[in-house]
Image (tube, rainbow, N blue to C red; front, side, top):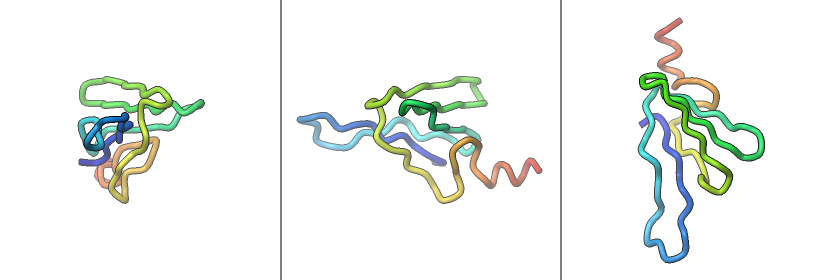
Length: 77
């Protein structure tokens, strides 16, 4: 898992929810007005999470916003 999106827990829910984990080559970006954009190059798919539809990003140390996991970048260059 390179990163995952923690989804909100609603009243009555018994556990925290997360979207499926994303891969090392996937990218996330924080857009204006609290929108989270996730791009999956393998499938050329972009998913947008509206404000309130996501709580946080859970990531490893070297997967920063705006690009793939750092180790993926290092193997390309």
